[in-house]
Length: 244
Picture 1 (cartoon, helix red, strand yellow):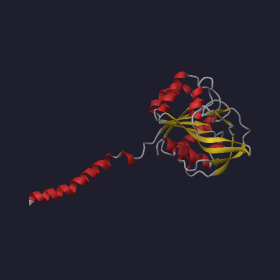
Picture 2 (cartoon, rainbow, N blue to C red; picture 1 turned 45 degrees about the vertical axis):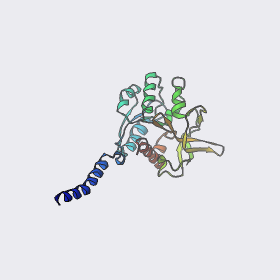
Picture 3 (spheres, rainbow, N blue to C red; picture 1 turned 180 degrees about the vertical axis):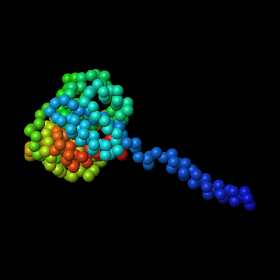
Picture 4 (cartoon, rainbow, N blue to C red; picture 1 turned 90 degrees about the vertical axis):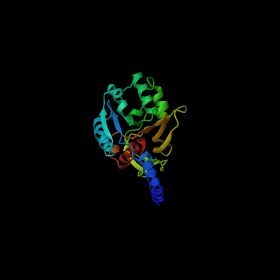
């Protein structure tokens, strides 16, 4: 009788123990750790300290990320091993082949890269052509004067566009992006409209190895960085690159 009671007890308890074991071991339900982000700015024509170091750092910090900023290119390489997301916004020349290879390996290994505004300009094509073909899918070398224009979403279902209006108006530099037909495949999330005959990608993603690149041509000054749509998709970009 005692053996039967013990047997029934084991039959009842063992499934619960195994269930608890597997629940405890299942990491798929756990949230990713907050990422570590480095913003790189600096050089001419933009107030990088104000709009990237101060404004974007504060926006990104609201996602729970750890954020730092530099305008010294030589400090990027020593930090890469400790980063989850590298955010390039600079328009100073990046000519160091060792840094180029390190960034390529960083993204290919599964980390995130954001290319913001000035960093997508055609600055160092001769020094690092793969940057434009593989990370961006093209480049930009002209824009009209700063003014108001419409941006409309082309992929509203993408997580980066969650909560962003299907169309909005913004005062910014409208980058006339030029596609490299042999470049990386682009998933365009939003287009900027210059006029009825001309519109250009404003936000898009590119896959590189195991990692992802988010390109954002918007971001000249406070008219964009303090725009509600910009704030929303920048936060979403951090979450998406961090696997959230």
